[in-house]
Length: 352
Image (cartoon, rainbow, N blue to C red; front, top):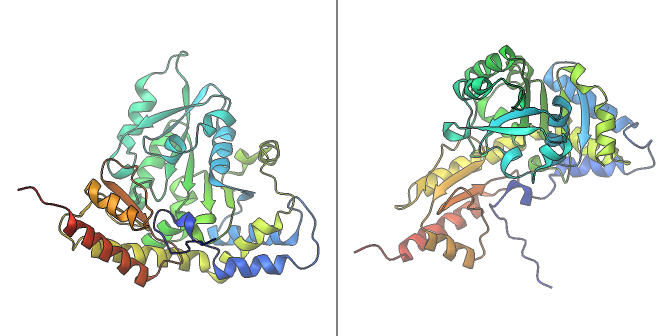
């Protein structure tokens, strides 16, 4: 059987395990260790997060982002509450109703905003739209950093959003599927993008940053973490051999690979965006601020690229293509993609 191992740009989930995560996984595989997170690897990883974020937060681990985001939102809300998020947020578009399922029905209230970002005005409009008992009471706010279209909330934007959220007693959840990329791009400390900006809980993705599996859940407001371990267990997210989720995280944290990997992916995306913009007929849909490049391509160009074996998503709209770079992206493979895009554009008949 022939296996196509060529690097693709559909998702940073396509990348393999980075050396640092794999090395620590193999180290954790020597001998036995207590189960269900009562091991030294899990303790050290939790301490590593507290050191990185400069605060005594509660740390939990889950298998994936869907579970992490959904269980956190369920812990912040009762079934009659609601969660405010952007209309393009992953919890709305790609979680198959998991936030509603795990919260026993908490409703997602969708807001609009340019470049995939909520604004204080949009949030306030949703909060103040109704306050009668017939409407699900807003209780939490979910932000995505970097956003689903690859853009970033600035510190000032986060400050303004945090102020309006806490003014109305909303707890703030941050979906950090590409949080490392945001930190690398903005050049600030992780604390400056989270609890110092009013974020109450962060879901920090490891899979997109070089791990095989694993999400870290950090409660900066420790009171909100009450019984969260029971919620994880009930949802099937308590790993018996927890050290194999925690050890790769420790590898990323202790070596600094979490930030190095993100910076590399961001730099590759910036290079890809610059090269694609030099091709007539290719239009950048959103600013390239993290590790994603979103471009407008003629449908025929997308078809030709797929016929050549390229894989990418076009969920943004007709002709809108997303290319994501990862810790393992190479300049040579980017050049191959750009060359094929250029050739496909040249092959498309132009209107008379």
